[in-house]
Image (cartoon, rainbow, N blue to C red; front, side, top):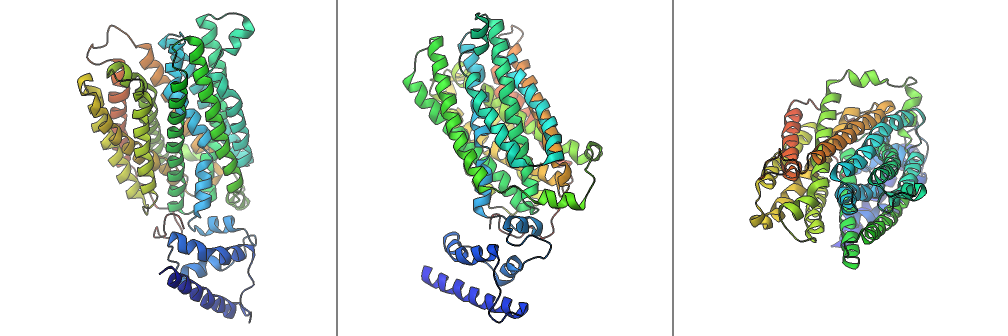
Length: 518
């Protein structure tokens, strides 16, 4: 069967070479460029492995060089024609956010737990997180503006990744500021950890904005843009699972509850997370070329898009609200989940890694499935709404779940994982739909929306932690239950309502009938 498939592919290639040679007036056939030579040599192998059914018309469309593009520039040609991207490009792009993802998972899952374990009050711990979120929020806006002005996505990405790598270990470790001052008071600890939290989040923002802005500049094909977002989300799940595997190993080796041992635990988690993340950053830098589509369009459109251009669009406010609510759903629930399973449900310490792992395994599976869907505007709205509805029901279950029924949290975790993937992938893809082909302002869009995301998450967690232990809260329903169940469910419901009012258009030069990743 495989031999027959290869024979058919060879026959098609031979006939196509002759056809191209006749049309080009070359008796020996078309003289391949670098791009053509590469494609002719490896396409048969990829067709056999991936079972891709290329039609002659589609291949002719791919193989015919365009005079307005640089010869041999495959990435530029795919971007201009809106042709679905290759798997290697999509996977390399998704790997580029692994360092951010694994450190972010540690930030939201364990930061509050770490700071309270070493002696800080819940309010002081929330201040540390809020300082980082505020620094991240403002950095995204300025970084977005600078990227729009000067470009060079990969350079910004590399610089941000370096800043994340060198500062993250100080967020989870001894207070360097306290050692310099010679005091270990709670106030100085709060200030010291807040400083490195801010530095870490500035680097995180630089990496995030540059990485997300690349989506619209890599390709014009809307289906491939969703593929990139889906790959990015899939690698986010891998990063989270990697973190929980690392944490489980570290907690098994260092199981003491002394403050010094706690710092050692999280320092090792930070070091291993940085090593894993940096490995994937290198893969991204090697596997993804600097997008030229933005530069080519800037040559055609001399004037840059002003901020007012986006503020005049109703869709901008709708997408901003939906994206912010989506991040509130995922981040707030993640930040308080460890407290919920141990303090509210009375489960063992292993549940702090097991329950989040189930969530992200389910999210990973759903993200892979989403890569095979042919996307349009109404499908984005449908799948996002489906994820929001799932979160409403699972959030209600989490809110009322009694400790005696704690095993049901595993079922709810499966639903939450699927809902997170549905909302995250489609929510990010709505940003790409908003930008469309207006590439001269894409970084501002991603930066401004990330500003709202970081600021809202920081303020929400600060508000929740400030009321932790308050006598005004109902005995049956603690702040942790509100944070993990009620608040995300309410945000999901509101985001579904806003999504229903959206008018998403399919801005594409070709219909959405291409496979997701060619």
